[in-house]
Amino acid sequence: MLALMSSKPMTLVSAPTLWDDAHWAIALNQFARASGLTICIYDVNKTRAVGPIVEHPLIHLIEETGAWRGGLCEKKELTMVNSVLENGQPVSTHFEESLYLQALPLRFRDKICGVLVVGWAFDQFADPIRCSRLAKSFDLPENILWKVAREVAPISRERISIFVSLLKTLANSILGQHALVDEARDANRVKDQFMATASHELKTPLTSIQLRVALLRRMKTPTTEQLMHGLDVIDRGVKTQTKLVDDLLESSRVSTGKLRLDIENFDPGELIRSAVETISPGAETKGVQVSFQSLPLRLKYKGDITRLQQVYWNLLNNAVKFTPKEGFISIDAREIGGSFVVEVKDSGRGLDSETLPRLFDAFFQVRSRSDGSNNGLGLGLSVAKAIVDLHGGTIRATSDGLGHGACFIVSIPSLSHSSNLFDA
Image (cartoon, rainbow, N blue to C red):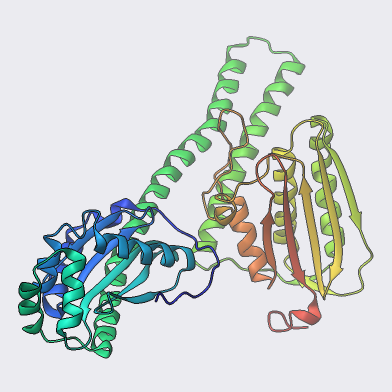
């Protein structure tokens, strides 16, 4: 009888390269030899990725009948694999009331990546009746199967449990090594992407400045209007360059733990109103309707005014950037449960389920244009989260998916709820 647990669907991850590793073959062969247990690993597609690894003379005999080539053993294991993938819990059973086996989930980065099936061993002394049933199941001569079975000592249920625990530790160790290798590769890929992005983004305003300076130099007698236009272009380039450098410095302070706050009393309602005023011209030019609602505040707040202003401005600026022409942005600010909560909703492209968990990672960018391009270094939201965290607050994003807009919610605790952070 299978031991079924929860019926809640599990989160699965397909990672075929996990099993293409000599570590598995070496470690599992040694384990099978030491324990006498038979081992298989199935991936989330219910395909056998490893095994059967057999070191038991009786199971060798059974294997030769094709039991794992569409035969009874494979069918039995697949029944267990289905249960584990559906419920995320280990299961155990007997085959023909004789051979004991277990199946348990393997996890990679907190998601089920496969199922380990182990066992196919007598957990009590074999007897002629049970061996007769086994022989008939696999179409083997009874006398041969009985001769092999009685020469093999059973493995007690307690001993099998110990072996399974050790095997699980071994498997988790190998999967952990894979995770570390993947993390190192990801970090290297992020570094390469950052270097390419930073080089491009830093070069763009410099190129604009250089071209404008060269153009002005070629003009023998530029008019006042031409000079002013040239200076405007140069000024925009300098400001863009300054912001990129500031973002890099701010991100560096965050990653090294050197981000410091200049704490003072402030009115968060005034900060969000100022941010709304800042982005309104850009929204108006784009034809984006901005709705702002703020309720009177009763509580007192302390924090870094400049950095919190940066957080609100970043969120609103992103909302304008990702909202199409004739779209809308709604900003709601109020006190909820002792905190100042700002909710920014837009009618933009929205966010998919893969993007949401990575949204506040450094250097992660949501493409804003149809050609997949973007501007900036992907640091704004990661820095914003660090600032909010230092204030004891929270920042999160929600979306019903692509085409359904996004909602960002920032919560900053009042002075009475942040006494552990700042002195009153």
